Amino acid sequence: MSWQEYVDQSLVATGNIDKAAIFNTEGTSVWASSSGFAVAPAEIKAVVTSFADTSDVKKVQSEGFHIAGEKFVTLKSDDRSLYGKKGKEGVAIVKTQQAILVAHYPESVQPGVAANTVEQLADYLIGVGY
Image (cartoon, rainbow, N blue to C red; front, side, top):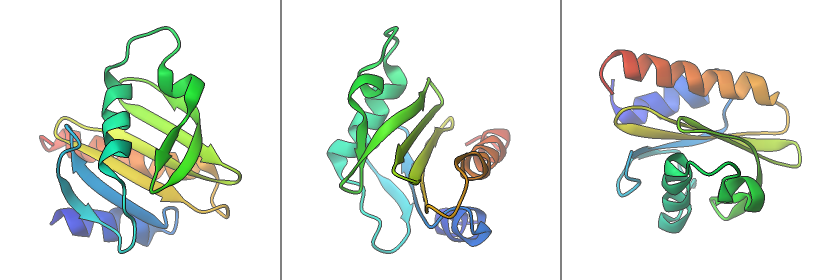
């Protein structure tokens, strides 16, 4: 399956995610993306930095973060996952061994359902070496 097929079929086609992108773990290369979902280089760099931040209170937790020009309040931040919310919509970002999955969900989807969709794809990718 191509990276674009993971975005289109494994994320967006579930109905739990409305747009998504896949980057390498350094955030320097976009492997696939939904049409019109543009995550700026500085935005993905902040995500990469948050995964490496081992502070008791991470910068991303106190300041939030931006994805595709929108600011999100951080709900969860650890070395694998970063979840954010803006009103009733949000993002679930999950890091695998070689990729970062960035997924946006609309206000009609419950945050836990969206996060579960992204986490399941991440688990699968880790299981096959990515």
